[in-house]
Each structure stands twice: as structure tokens, then as C-alpha cells.
Image 1 (cartoon, rainbow, N blue to C red):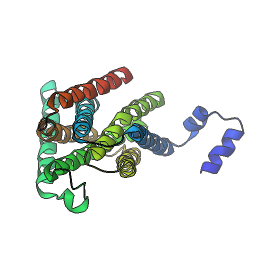
Image 2: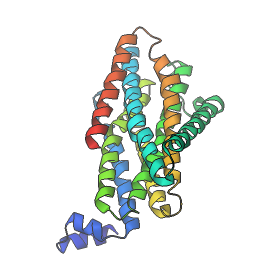
Image 3: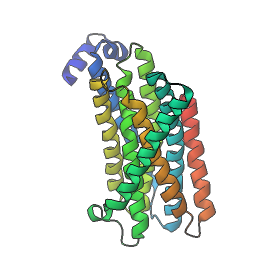
Image 4: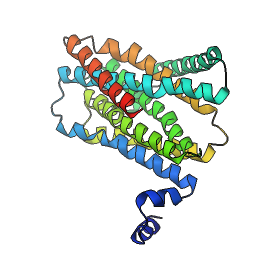
Length: 279
């Protein structure tokens, strides 16, 4: 496949022209790969971090919490409302009801995961890190990875519509938003004592999930389109629960409360700028 791409480009086809000439399925697959790679780009700033003490742990976790709080609001909840209205053609009341119920299911799901899944059994963290905090961080990372699934689904499904430019804009927007989300995963892993290498791998895995779901989206766009708003709202509920119930209380437990909360605000504002500017 790559050899064919190279050969066609040599014949004079531009990248854009070649992309638009591909079957829709391949367009969706390539778009999924792009957003996965852009998630990994978010891990680049991790190269500049050294010696993660408690103060830096609180700042990093606060920043990642703020990034994801904004991403959940602008990239999941608001699109879920728009997609619900477009997909089901309900009245405003029932549009909000569908999203609200899906969010509640997401909250219940993540509560059950946090209660019954023993992340520490499978992922050993630094012995100096509080076990309860480490568990909550792992739930946070799990929720981020979960939230990447409907985003990837949206990218893949975008190529099932007639407007290719709109699908490309959606890919670019979600891809650019994935950069700070990848950073959030990496920062969370660093905050509980993992090395930069493991943090990079964790970010890569969260990106692969988005690539995988984009492929599912383009393959099944004609059959499960109604699941997109439900999936977005489900992931939003899971993320809201983890951030508000788990992350925010933890960053206020130590002597760096103000700094950690300010970092959360900074992360939220950064992600809000990206989401609004990218549309």
C-alpha cells in the first residue's frame, strides 16, 4: 500500500488529490492513524521533566485534570448534544434527556470500574506514591482512554458523509485537541512515578484506541450512527466523575493546594482555547 502511495505521488499526484481519490474506507483509516499519531505528539514535553517531587506531582495532575475537564465539556458533551439533536430529531427536552441518561450510565460504569478493578494488581507504581492516589490516577487514565473511543468513532464516521472537507476539518480539530490530551496521560503517569519511556508507551496506547475506533467508525458508519451521541455522552459522564470526584479532591490534600488548583485552571483555559479556536 505504501509503495503504491509513493509511486502515485511520483507520477505527479498531490497528497490532497491522492487522498481524495482513495476509497472512503481508506480515508477513514488514514484519518484514524493521523489522530493516533497526534496524541503521541503530546508526550514530547515529557522529555523536559526531571525529578518529579510531590509539588510537581500535584501541579502535573492538576494540569492534566484541567485539560481533560475542558476536553470533556467542549469535545464530548457539547458535540453529544448536537449529534443527539441531529440523529434523533427529538425536541430539546428529549435531546438533553438522551445525553443525560447516557452520562449517568457512564458515571455508574466508571464507579463500578473504580470499585472492582484492581489496577495496582496489574500496574505497579513507585513505592513512595500513596496507593490510593495511584489507583485514582489509573482510573483517570482509563477514563481518558475510554473517552478517546467515541472521538475516534466520530473521526471515522465523518468520512461516511458527502462533505469530505468537513470530515477533514473534524479530523484536524480532534487531532490537534488530542495533543494536550496525550500530554494529560503522560503527566498523570509521571505524577505516580513512572519513567518517561513508560509514559510515552501509555500515551501511544491511548492514541491507538482512537485509531482503532476510527476504523470501526468508517466500517460501520451506515449501521451504528445513532451510537455516536450516546458514546460521546457516556464518555463525558465517566470523565466528569473521575475528575470531580477523584482528581480534584486529591490535588488539594497536600501543601500545594493553591498551586495545584491554579494548574487545573491553566490546563482548562489552555484546552478551552484549543477547542474554541479549532471549532
